[in-house]
Length: 143
Image (cartoon, rainbow, N blue to C red):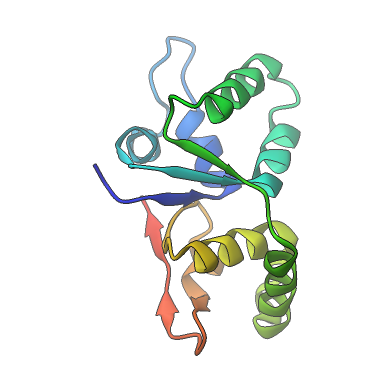
């Protein structure tokens, strides 16, 4: 098992994507979900995933059921007001990246929880970010 991860929208969508036959479309992303000791799903990520799955309500209902099932390794994370403030600080600090609130919240939650592994497709933005009090720690991008 790999240590906990924070899920970003693109990473979570890829991890859930399957062919018509049920084979994972992106097995390396799916592997992160099946091997992580904990998958932290920030609330704003879940809202964004819902937007992208608006044509596939069955998949969205399944994901929500899994996230809120106490027997799974998912943990739904409601952002604290301090996470929102931190997200806006990071957005301003790294303004050329144009992070926005969802990505900023993913980073703020990762920083607060000290879970520096992020399941994401956005290597450009998340790879440029540094977290911590002195902005000295890079995030580990998975897969």
